[in-house]
Length: 443
Image 1 (cartoon, rainbow, N blue to C red):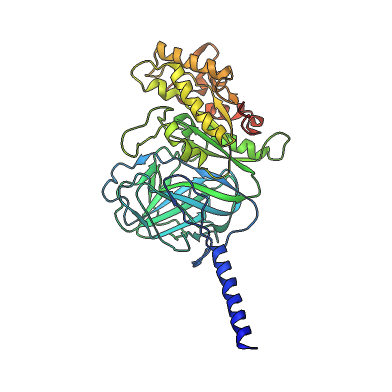
Image 2 (image 1 turned 120 degrees about the vertical axis):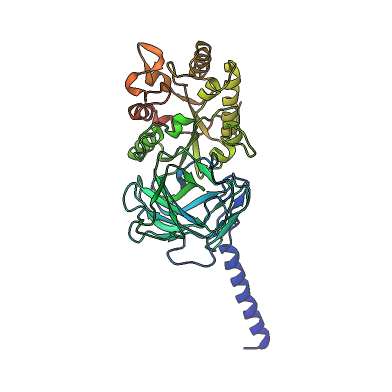
């Protein structure tokens, strides 16, 4: 071989190496609190990690909106403790990735170790055999998340069954300030002292909590779903008063019905993720910067449009705009806010199903003028002036003998939130075919 030919061969080899490296390096997983599809799939591969499978559709298997900073963690966060979040999947897949959020942190959050595993049994911190995977971020086992940001993990290959619990565990050795959390989990999670991130027995996890911390989404690569339905709502969507550890929110019922009907005529193959926040309003934010319990309008882009594989949106908001304002709210103001949400979804080509506002006579916040506002909002929703399709929760759950209040067996007892039976009814009356199709064309 001549020297000239040797140089040519060497140059060709270098070009191939650079091309392969460029293909492996996909992007960075930080952003301003909105979901990103950018992921690292190369770099170092710690034990229990694997390259992602290449077939299927990325969809949301679970999610929870960040609500605020956890009280009592303002100074030290949860430094020196492993946080094992238990989340429940609506759909299964062959690979998974998670989103971790430091939205409400006031300083950088250093995660030095994180893992994902399928739970050995329901409501249990132990991992199923051979499912423990170390999470990485750009190929690294640790990541620093700046305040106000979130990060998407690398993909790990692990069989994730539908309708099962998954364990997402993080460890931070240093103080990080307020812990970004979701307080109304209706699901018991766990903490342990020290770095027990890859413990499979669950034995060190002796402290229980009803919060989800840091983790805000679990995505899976699935052959069972073609997209994600994102439900944005308040406590009625969050599942407040539903039985803890039982997955009896109305969105769980909807998810199960869609999964069972997969492949049926006119029923889309969708997963469901729940973006409910207790006390949430269409119009008004909570206190703080960033605002805790952010309004539907302010969080719609991040919590709905930013979810993985979103194909349809369900909106169940408006009751708190009536209950939490000392003065009577103009129903047209609430409806205008709802229409703004719909317009954002339509701009992305997404179909929107909206819910009527359920009755609350007997609740401490009830007043006749507030009932008049609820009725006026519902009249516009039923007239087709707000959404592409309507699910009439009001009609389905109200007492036929007193339509201003919930039917007694659908009432949890506080005259606002449903019982488990009431939540089941909400999921059962939802027309699955109403989710099919895109947004109507703008004239």
